[in-house]
Image (cartoon, rainbow, N blue to C red):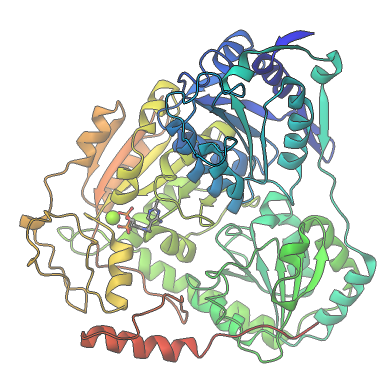
Length: 635
Ligand SMILES: Cc1ncc(C[n+]2csc(CCOP(=O)(O)OP(=O)(O)O)c2C)c(N)n1
Ligand SMILES: [Mg+2]
């Protein structure tokens, strides 16, 4: 069939399906894009012609549209995705950040940046990078390190293997991430006789890989011998829909469960074996048990520094790790016993292998006691301030969102002080673990609004609450316009503390007094910075005359200004049933942070400085670093 390369690609994408456990669905929900000379005539024409198989959604910023695609894919447990098309040059490179985010979080997105002419005839074309010693280089080479598969389609027939390979990678839970097919603008518009079969419906089955029986037996042996076993549940538990299997395993064995950012909510918070967040942003309950654990069963986790508290979380000198993961790369971490497998199948197999076994009851009781104590601490933290005139604390804002979300709502966040607070405080209620969506692989400011849009597109039946700080908001507010245009009813809680509260606190902790983390006029270098205790020196006179609520309203969102937690609660209730985005603005006390609980994060402090505060911080840093462990114990 004679089609242009772009037409063939769109028709191919529309014919791809994915299935797991027998359910079969179309893989691509649509295509986000921004047109320029590098894609308007090729892919633009094809998308117009084939809008029935691949609906087109215009975005406002290329980075943001990848975030929306990522939000969608995550909410769909990687069983659905969007394509993203851009022009050549800046449109394409704007997607690089989104690509890195997708790949780091192991979430499927198909990126289709336009590229410069394969024929090279009109070179240098508008927006082309010229590299004098290498004619094959284009700005799209920036996608190589951040893509799980990269191909530049320079001949029409190359599309066939490229498209098939793209689908293999996108639908493989162990390999997935950003897939980039760079499409030279001339090739997009070129016609070719594609075989009919290329457009036939194709089903990509995501099989649940079983673990090797010997590995299960060894893992079961280790867990049987453990006095203080602990589960660390990662995103893989949720993506593989293994939350019920996790609960069954924990209940059968009495092994307590703590969670990474991506795995938060894998076990509902009310469960007596739920210790909540672990690591640098962990709960006292989880971090205490982690410190003493002798066998740690990591499931679907890539063991980031936040999870391991920069390798200081697990202090038993003989601690052993068992890693259930779809990739051998993650399964091998911490010298662990690798169980390369789907999380659900592995959990069921382990439960069977451990039939009749239970962790020592003192350990289980200890977990339940710590969990209860932590629940009381959360209640204390999320309580609204008694003084109505005081600025609300972020913890109370989280409490209000948590209540509004109920069992089925989803909270979306990515950067700032909120991810750590949410990780600690969020009361997870959805048994499927889909109520908590914090992008913390890349922790990319600006993800929140477009990411939340993607979540809502994937789960229209759920209420979506985007938690966005003023700093993150300013990075990518433009996608609000897309939410207005597409009538995507998300609720955005814009928490304004006039700057980077998170990095300000970090700066104070390294002795640098919040330097450069306030929004204020920078024409006066002598302005005081925060004192060490974090006393508010950001006097109103120094606060910039910026009105973010007015900004959101100007982009077409419905905006509600709130001042107290009671007003916030009322606004969240009121936002139900809106037919577009609602922005609820609230000012928060930037110094009323949630503390960390018996944990640490490795941020290197200057080794020499004239500042006593830096020298003191360095001393503390060196002491803390002594707790770092290299896990070399073999199972
Ligand atoms: C794109 C990007 N740039 C820089 C950072 C580093 N960073 C992490 S949090 C943060 C400040 C976020 O400010 P805001 O959204 O207001 O949240 P707050 O810290 O006030 O809670 C910065 C600059 C980042 N995570 N992402
Ligand atoms: Mg802020």
